[in-house]
Image 1 (spheres, rainbow, N blue to C red):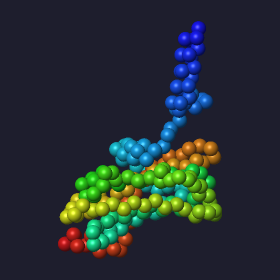
Image 2: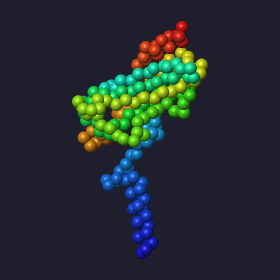
Image 3: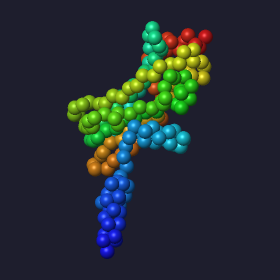
Image 4: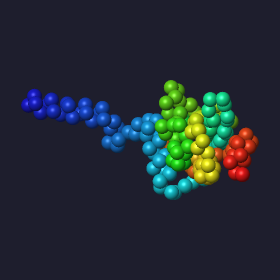
Length: 189
């Protein structure tokens, strides 16, 4: 009898610790790695959405030449929400081919590691949210193929709306800055 009680207790503790919710479904843990995996799955699905309905997304790419390296900076800005967005997570992933041109171990980023969550509400504060990442371009790597993929950006926006967790994916092109266009012109000749 004690053995059966011990086994039952062990199973109950195991189920509670494994992430089962009260309704029996597994709770999803969001991590930096899981954001990258989900974005790669979206990229491979080929089922792209290009324009969000509940907010505006603006993204830019800038190439910056320094003495020690040439950096390519990606920025994503979420603004003008028409719904209340709670616990917002923003993530983006570049075209996987960018790995051939960057000194980087991966080509995604996310704010999931931030210590605090935030909400964005219509006509409230903050007005929007920003996510950016800089990469170092590998020396002598710029070629015509890079120019065909460097603007590709795949975005995941996650938030709670009326108690329901929303996950929205987009494929967009990052808008190059004037400095980026000048840098690129050197390689188009």
